[in-house]
Each structure stands twice: as C-alpha cells, then as structure tokens.
Image (cartoon, rainbow, N blue to C red):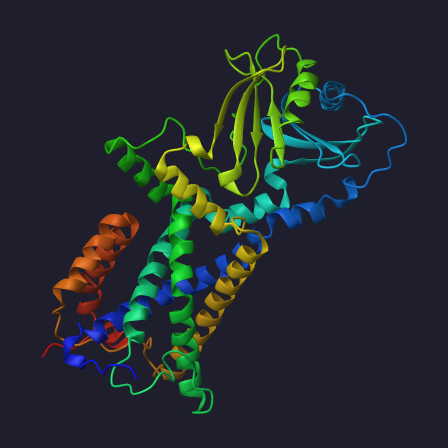
Amino acid sequence: MLTRIPFAAMPSYRAVWRWHFYAGLYCVPFVLFLSVSGTLYLFQPEIEAWLDRPYSQLEITGSTRSPAEIVQAAELAFPGSAFRFYEIPRTSQSAVQVVLLHEHSRLRTYLHPEKLKVLHSVREEDRFMRVVRHLHGELWLGENGSYLVELAACWTLVLVLSGLYLWWPRNTKGVAGVLYPRLRLGSKVFWRDIHSVTGFWISPFILILIMTGLPWSKFWGEYFREVRKITNTAPQRQSWSTRSTFRDEPPAEGYNVLELNRVIETVSNLHLDAPIQIAPPAGKSEAWTVQSMTANRPRRVTLAVNGQTGEVLSSHDFSHQHPIDKVVGVGIAFHEGQLFGWLNQVLGVLTTSALVTMCVSGVVIWWRRRQPGTLGAPAATGDRRVSVALLALVVFLGIALPLFGISLILVLLFERLFLSRIAGLKRWFGLPEPG
C-alpha cells in the first residue's frame, strides 16, 4: 500500500501542471518527429547494409586489383578529385568504397575490385542515413534547427520531471493507476493512466536519451566544451563525432598512393571493428591514419601508420580518453542503440514507442478537457508562491541547460508584460483575473 501524502505538503501542484502543459504544447510535435527519426537511426548499420546490398554480393571471377589501383581508378573516373579515404571491404565479394573530395564535397564511390568499374557514387550528405541524421539533429535547418531541437530536448526534460511530480501518488490506497493502468473505468481514466503510468516506467530511459543527445547539440555542446576548458578537463580534440573525423583537405603533396597496400597489410592483422577507414598523409604529416568507425564508440581505434614500413607509430583508443569523454562515448553509443547489440536497439524502440504513446494520450487528454474559447491550459491561481526546493531545481536547470533558462525567462516576461494586459488572452491562457 502506498503512503498517503498530504496535498498541502507538496509545492504548487497547479503551477507545475501548467508548466507541464505548456512544455507539452511545444514539445509534442518535436518528440513525435524525433521518435520516428530516432527509431530509424537506431538501425543505421542494418539500413546502410540493406541499401548497399547491390554492391555486397558481386561476381568475382579472377584476382582483384590492389587497393592503390582501385583508388587511382576512382580518381580517374572523377577528374579533379582528391583521395580522402579508403574503406576496407567487409567481404571478398563487396565493392570497394573510396571517398573522394570532389566539387567541394565528399563523394563516396563504389568500385568493382576486379574490373575497376565505378558501380555507384553518391555525395556523403545525400546518403539516406546522413539525411536522417540531419533531420533528427537539426530538422534540415542548420544551426537554427539544432537550436529548436535542443530547446525541445530541454523542455522535454522539464516535461518528464514535472510529469513525475504530477504522477506522485496522493490520496491513493493501491497501485492501480500508479504502477499499472486501469483499463475498465472509462475512457477518461484509461487515457490518463496510459499517459502517466507509461511516463513513470519509461522516464529513466527518456532522461538518459536526452542527456546523451545533448553533447551533439550546437548550443549546449559549445557550452559543455567551454565549461571543460575552464575546468581544465577538455582534450585537444573532442572524441565524439557523428561522421568520419578526417578533415576535408587534400593529401600531402608528393604522397605515394602505393603505400596504401602496405598499410592495409598491417591493418588486416589487427582485427579492428568495421568499418575501417584509411586516409593518406595530410598537411605536414607523413603517416597514414587508420580509424575504426564502428558504431559502438568505446571500441573505436585510431592509428598512425608508416606507409613505407607498415609500422604502427601510435594508437589511440577508448582507454586513452579522458573519463568525461568515456562517459560521453558510452552514452552516445547507447543513444544510437549500438552499445550492447540488439537488446540496446529493442530498448530504444520501446522508449520511442512509449514517447509516441504519451504524446498521443496527452493530446487526447488535452482535447477532451479543453473548454470552448480557451487553450485548455490548467487555470492559474493568484498565488505565485513556490517552494524553495522547486525554485532551486528551476535555477539549477536554468544553469545546466542555458537554452531552457533563457526561454523560461522570455516566457515569464511575455506572460507578465503582454498576456496579462489583454483580457481576451488572459481568459484564453487561463491566467487569473485581478482580485
């Protein structure tokens, strides 16, 4: 039996309810969209393998050409291009993928390893999963889209925390409607319980998804890096990225493409996780760079290899990273559904499905309780007092999530300076009339 908690002992329930409502009003469209795009992103390796299937079962009748010859064939097929990196084929029947710098963008080419024929080419930015990534991270709107997504993520966190507060059992003698939904007490109770109970069970995973997604965001990501610089915990180069970390610059002048053959001989004995990308020397460096770009980020490795001797000059893996980068790397791998295999993907799908369920049920609840001529927001009271704990939590969130803090101040100013002065809008938003 659950303990009865007096209502008077809790902070302002109605104020929290209003903020929960407004957060939901803004977040629902974004959460629905991000849940769908995020579900696709969970299966990036499988989707890319399926899309590349025409180039993974080639008919090979004779001996294959050397990696250096394949790179030269790719450059010859696209005049004016520059070799960026070579991706080791996953099977002996797979096309070789060579990425070039061509017309100011990365071009991925698929070449037959025996005939040296270009079977397919596509700009990196036009690949299906890259499009999904841009939609998921920035709504295909660049930095402005990233800010909108980050703002939605911040307010979704508020939505979850306020939802847990509203869910907290009061005047309850059992677990029905708290730990499991009541399905036979009418549609009103059904939708409310589906919304709140689902939210309770899935809330830890939603919070994890939000926090592990923030390092990618534009505003919070920069904020996080600045904090790390101030606290002297920042590495020279950020260890997480959503793409190959090879810079878009041409190979070093005078490099020998034939050295690629020796580098691959060395790498083939190291048993790195695919995909494995090999880039020629760039700038003043004479070493080739080898990267395991596996989706399971804690297993990624970066090597510097001498192209003439095949000697591994340096190696950088998960064990060399700063503890903060390790936490972020593990979190991103979990966010992408790649940390512990198919179970991670299933957990991700359950989370996104629950998010869709809560969005739909929340909209149904709002629409049914909405009175004609009003927005349907819970009516505000004239009492603006809040508990010290609630105020401290809001201040903490405002500091930890700057976009949330800025937007909260703007909303409060807008309500106080504009909405409260227009009678029609006050009634529409459920604001209190002067007493």
